[in-house]
Amino acid sequence: MGNPVDQIFVILKHWLLSFCPEGYVPIASILLSVIPIMAVFGGLFALTTILERKGLGRIQNRYGPNRVGPCGLFQPIADGVKMLTKEDIVPRAADQVIHFLAPFALIGPVYIAYSVLPVGRNMAALDLDAGLLFFFAVGAGSELAIFMGGWSSRNKYSLLGAMRAVAQMISYEVPLILSSVPVIMLAGSLSPTAIVDAQGGHSHGLMQWHLFTPWGIAGFFLFMIAASAEANRTPFDIPEGESEIIAGYMVEYSGFKFALFFLGEYLGLFAICGLGITLFLGGWHSPFVFLEWIPSYFWFFGKLMAMIFVFIWLRGTLPRLRMDQLMGFGWKFMLPMTLLNILVAAIWHLSKTWLFPGVYLTRWALCLGILCAAYVWLGRSLAGNRSVGKRVYRFAD
Amino acid sequence: MLGEGIIKGMAETARNFIGSYSDPERLVTVQYPEEHIPAKQNARNFPFLVFDVEDPVAGLRCVACKICEKECPPQCIYIVMDRDDKGKPCKHPKVFDIDVSVCMSCQICVEVCPFDAIKMDTEFELSETNRYGGLLLTKDRLSKSNEYYHKIHSVEAAEVDARLADEKAKAEEKVKAKLAAAATAKAAAQAAKPVAG
Image (tube, rainbow over all chains, first blue to last red; front, side, top):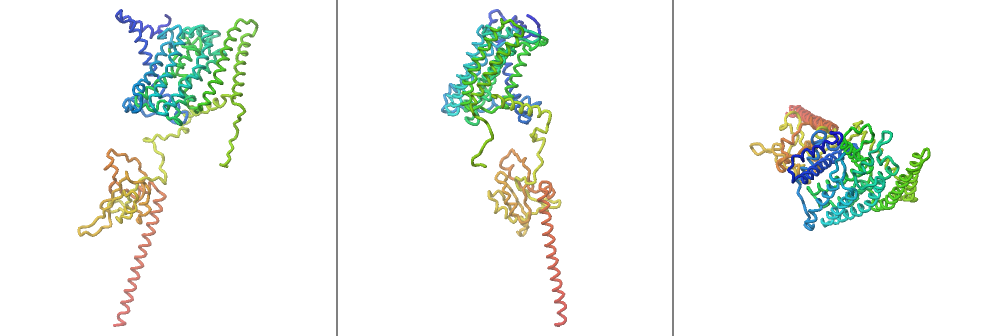
């Protein structure tokens, strides 16, 4: 079983199950897996809201919320109370049933998707053989929920927002899945646990994360770009562009249902970050062998917090894309790059059998060269002949 | 190259993020209830009544002429002149109310006052639990000393004081001149009398 500190939650679960009457063990086991997931990621959502507001504040040279509790740490509680006590308004013209169901239809699939993520050694709630497929299939359910919300509100802004959201999420689902195909190819499995195990080896003290390969670097970046579009994060947050369509599909939601949409969005972000960690960042493995003694779940959540920080940083930096730019980027850049990355992964894998001095460097140079050349060429050709120079005003001067 | 701008932007925001911790000068926020921005000379919101010397009742500059009441565009001023037992007007307001929930801070009352008795205040923390009575400022709440006026609008108050002193001196001179003229006329009349007699 390994290190007891590392396995403390697994041991605890088995210990609690030993008190359970024979017939109830399966259901108790399910509850003991589900409740911690809901509690931990729900708590992480609360923490992230305050971190995001603080981080964005600091990026804009402000303090951020600092009134409620020490350093404003109780702000999420205050927000929660505010959301709970707010009036829940449903438009008269809305489709009452679907309008009510939409937030729950968003939360449900996202939580289900967590079940296949290995958050620590032996700590995947559901060790499916086709876990990755399951994750993507369930994740696609959030599109339906968003469209339910947008359509049932009977408001042109929500409908436009929902249509944008669906168009964007379906477009970016393609590069998202294609960018994870190399991982499946090289790990030879669709099971997240097996993929993490495949990254467990080490050479020269450095773990063999997929990130430390040329196709892994490219794949990770492509995956994260597609993930931020999937999670509706800046610069791909046009479904809720305040300046154009107020809040998109969330326009007609208030009170706790709005909070649920918010929660769903953040949970989706964590889930997809968790998948990125599983696929490319070695899951719960530490980066260096001498750090293996730190419990695995610390590594997973540490990496998750780091990814969340990067997303906050990006949100504080980038403006929102235009709809056509977003679609163009998705189909003209992301798709070819992910396809090429599959090819590069194949070259990397097949060149393993080459035998001559300096083969390692040659393989790296070859794979990175192909990717960089494609990146530069695609970037240049997409930019066209546009040059950004000094702006000339016809009448204002 | 593609993505160059993103790197530059991220460097800039990272600089801001770290800078805001290391260099508090970057933070422009004034933490309001504890800290205040120093008041500006030209700040104004609602009128108050100036009184001289120590006495907020007798020292009030207002003579209840009701010019401001008549000029006030939203008509938020209400004045009743004080009268003595015989019903003679006292040149003193008995009631002076300003409903600051109606006042639009136009400063017209200040412009029309010939006695420099009403001036604009800078106090803005006026929240009340009672929206009718609480925002109806009565004479005792409106009366504020000339020192307070000097504190909030030092330049303007110095100007007003100089002008008032000037006017007072002129008035005194006038009175003196009048008295002197009367005295000389009297003396002349007295001097002429015996001659005629």
